[in-house]
Length: 390
Image (cartoon, rainbow, N blue to C red; front, side, top):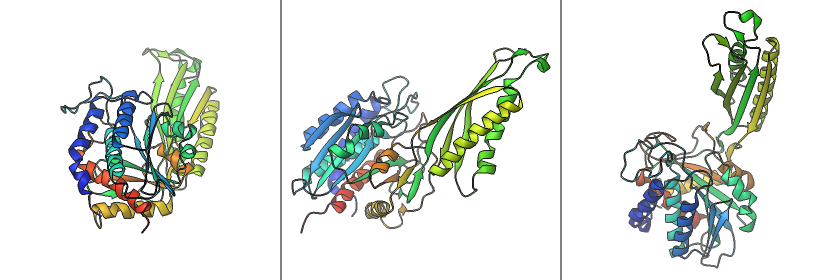
C-alpha cells in the first residue's frame, strides 16, 4: 500500500493549492476566501454534496461510494485557519497579509485533504460515504465544536472520524500515534491581586501585591511537584505578570495570566481546585485580596483504541515497516479535534514534516514533500475502512 501513483501525479497541483492558501492566510472564523476556494474545488471534483457555513465558515463535502453511499460513513477533518504571526520565511509564496501567516501547516492539511477528495471522487473505489470536513478556528476558536453544534455529526451520520497534523522534527515519510491521550486539555487563567499601594520607601505602610503575586507564582508550581502523582502530567505556566509604572511606587494591583495543561479529567479538576485554594490562601496570608478566573478550553484529545490500531496499520502501509511510532508520548499542546473524538470514535495521527522550524514559529513552513504521503493516507484509510463488496 505505497503512495498512490495518481496522487504523486497530482502533487504539483495540490502544492499550488497549498501555496495559494499560504499566501492568503485567514485567522479564526475569518476563513471566507479559504472556504470559498475549498467549496469551489470540491464542486469541480464532482463531490456529491458541498455544504458551506457549517460552524460559521466551515465546509463539508460528501463523497458517495460505488454503492451510492449506502452503509457506513466516516469523516476526515482538516483545519483551515492561520495565526496572527508575522512571517519571516522569505519564501516566494510567503503571506501577503501583514501580521498573519500559516505557521502551523493548516494550509498543507487543507490541501492534502482536497487532493484525497479529488481522487476519491474520481475513483469511488469504496462503499459507503466519506465526509470531508474543512474546519475554521482551530487556533483558539473551537471551530470543531462550532461545526458539531451546527449538526456536523448528525446531519451527516458520521460513525468514525479521523484527523492528521504535521510534525516538525520527524522525518517526512514517518507517522506517529498513540492510544488514549495524545494532546492535552488547554485551560487559561487570570489572577488579579489587589493590595495597598504606597511609597516604595515605606513598604510597611503597604500591602505589596508584587510580593503576593510572586508567592502565588511559586506556590502554583507545587501543584505539579507536590499535589500531582509523579506519573501524571500537569503543566501550570504563568506567562503574564504585570504591575506598576514607577520605580518608587508600590502598585495597588498585580495582574497575572497563564495556562494549565493536563491529560486527564481528574488532573484537570485537581489543578483547578488547588489553584483556587493557593490563590486565596496566599492572598489571605498577606492581607491582600485576590481573584482567580479559570476558563476551561479544549478537552484532552483522546484516541480510541481500535481506531488507533487501524490508523497505524494504514499509515504503515503507506510509509513501510518501522516508519510508524505507535506509542508516541502525548504532547502538552492542545487540539480542538478533541471535541470530535468526544462525539465519535476515531484517531488523530502525526505525520513527519522534516527538519523545519517548529509550529507557531515565524520561520515555519509546511513541507510539500509530505503532500503525496498525507493524501495517500486519507485515500487508503477510506478504501480500507469502506471496502467495496466482492
